[in-house]
Length: 426
Ligand code: S3P
Image 1 (spheres, protein in one colour):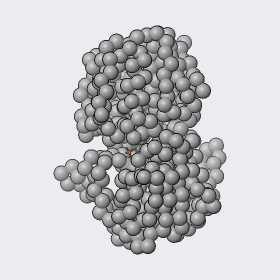
Image 2: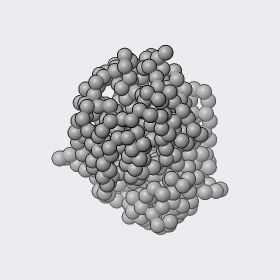
Image 3: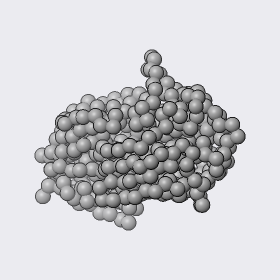
């Protein structure tokens, strides 16, 4: 689907956003593992979440969705059933990598498949530690399709993460939930910490190195999950408000987890007027309202250690960077090449279309020059965050802009366009 956007005058009002994608995936997974009935409120309803829900339904869990909540009848530590068919992961890297840890501990074999984008994303990063735990995995040279067969001797490991990745970390820790002896993941750079927070895992921290432990003792129990709204989704609206004239927006009940709000600290350093209100902690997760107002921004240095914390927000941050004073530079972000698209290439190619000078590096890019305001068609590269980032750029450009294959926004936020329409100032 091709979507055209016209320039808007600004934004105003209050916007309720859908549940956080990372927390929603984990809530469905943990509820499906727990022995009994759990309820999930404000769970994200998107294509990626549907992959997680379907996978657990295929393994015997009863999952019912009502307007208000999701009710999950979990199967307990040895209750998951062999699915009749392969598990189709669609576009969802989080489902694939996290569920691999759970599947490696089962007594039955499963086959995971995905769409063309997911089938090109690296899975060796989870195959390696799971193989050390005794799992028997075959794959297409480290890519999907992947077959996970029962381990002969499933065992705990100590694993130092070679890449700062919450998906790898969670995969290993979830596998560890099925073992008496503790499994330990060692993390040098902190990635998002929802798995350890939600499962209340033991953490030792020394000289900036974190050791996170999981075992059977942490196996999830039936619970009531109240998912906060997604800061990564909020980032599109925050940056749109900052860059629009005379605009102010309230985003209630957003996840303010410390491992996710790097985007706010960078924007504040850039001069953004952003405040938090009604901050509270629920289910171990910090949440609160975000109030954002139009601001004049200037580009700042983005420190290497914050990259894992802002990895999903870099495409939209680069849009802020175009309008900010000075050049926008991001480095140390090679992981962007392994997301739903090669996000370094996707951002650079789209920005070249509007006449900006782009210097592409293996691990990032630099933007300089002036925006050419004539109307262009951006490519989404079938990547939801690229489609949304360039929709924001489109509504800020004098002649508007068009997005090819816009429908991929449904991966994380099917109602993106409606949300945008709801806050436009006339
Ligand atoms: C996620 C982790 C991130 C992020 C993804 C969701 C998660 O990936 O890009 O959208 O829920 O664990 P990595 O931390 O593995 O890079």
